[in-house]
Length: 169
Image (cartoon, rainbow, N blue to C red; front, side, top):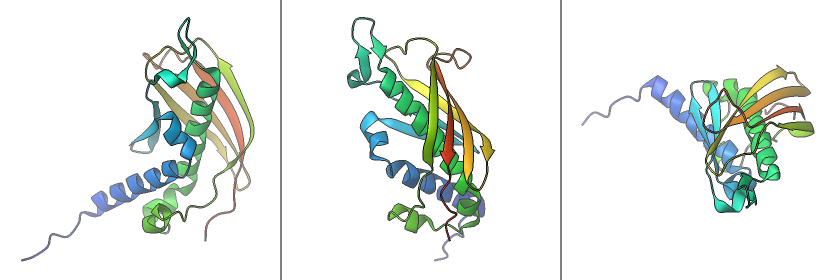
């Protein structure tokens, strides 16, 4: 019985998904807050599933500002790491089995992080996307936006600067 040869495009897609899962799994706080990440092409979207523990003001009710800031920072850090490691993942230079076993390169370190709270986060799912505006060998800048019902009406946005770790290998 002949075994079908795996499609190279499907192998790359699977390698990308596995690498993103390994990155996300390396930060326990992401799991605690219930944040997940969806990948569509080269775009990564963070999803903060609503949970009662995320409410900061029960009288409004509104998402806690610290949860919002952490959500934005996680989206920025994972997107930056994803962008930084993307070529190595796609080329197979970064072995997915090694990543899954905890062999991840160090994550970027936050230098500064500024959040603009534009309105209260409502008690529902939230989404965030980050855009890397500068990626150098030692330093990176990232802008992040979070929204709930309408992407054109963000409820928070952030600017971050990161110190980049040394390249793996």
